[in-house]
Amino acid sequence: MTAMDRIGLDRIEAAAKLVGPAVRRTPLIAARVLAERTGVEVRLKCENLQRTGSFKPRGAYNRIANLPETERERGVVAASAGNHAQGVAWAASTLGIDSTVFMPIGASLPKLAATRAYGATVHQAGETVDQSLVAAEEFAEQTGATLIHPFDHPDIVAGQATVGLELLEQMPDVQTVIVPTGGGGLLAGVAVALEHLAPHVRVVGVQAARAAAWPASLAAGAPVALDGMSTMADGIAVGRPGDVPFAHVADRVSRILTVDEDAISRAMLLCMERAKLIVEPAGAAAVAAMMTYPPAELDITGPVCAILSGGNVDPLLLTRLIGHGLGAAGRYLVLRVTISDRPGSLGRLLAAIGGTGASVFEITHSRAGAWLAVDEAEVSLTLETRGPAHRDEVIDALTGTGYAVRVQD
Image (cartoon, rainbow, N blue to C red):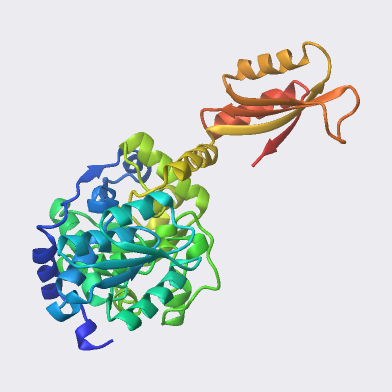
């Protein structure tokens, strides 16, 4: 890493002066349910309420605003699954600069539409952000446009560091900050800002388990690329940490945690139900970590700030994720029950379910199936329950009554 790539407090403060008037100072709200779990104060830094719905405009605006006039005239280009795309499009339009964005073929329609609405010319290329980035790099070489990398540039990291400055002003007694992590721009920025202003604060990164490049990279002492990724958290699905973020994270971040898909969906559900906040899968990763790991394992000793890094989620995906989250939280129970194919059998099954306090959400009655005897039928049920303990009570009550019950994942 060259001296020009090093990010000091002077660079972060310059970014704050440049970015501050353009972006929102996002709120910090209490998270009582997480405080009860950990025994310490927990607050959420709501970057999901930032302009364009994520923290990304901070870095994008800082990077583009620092371009010399000769580069501005040739425009900028970026690659992103959505949040960086919108951040670059908004920042470029605000500064009067042309922007082109390459997005994966599977990018959500709302993110595509929003990126175009912010003023960018959008092309879809590749199946992943890494593949889109290759297309963006080729475009930059052909046209002279400046590539605005999602995370691997000092100006990007310095812009994201303004999140750390804000949360420290809002929560000066914070002891631990938990950060959703993909390429590492936000993690590095927060870590550097706090190292300079509050070196006692622990910074913890969180990755989706199915897209976790940081643990192996830190163990190897250099960024290591993943062979593949598969996660709903597309905002942090990055196959290789950035060189600039890595250099600042390696000796400044206490720990990198991973969370599974169930934990992410449960965290999104909690944010909606308890905090009244719409948070995308990547944005909920820090909350997922606090719901997954015991306080002792998190090594929490004082007030915690969990960053909600974004809130841009496709409504159709959100509908599926809510269902997934309800199932993961024990609020849905899907059963297949074999009953006698005689009048009144289905009514008796439903009466037994009603006696447990569960509600029938969906039901299918079938006489087809090679595994069924001639006088048997199978009922598929989706039940609304009050949580894991109630699920077990329902299953025990039905099996105790003599029903053959199969639980579906």
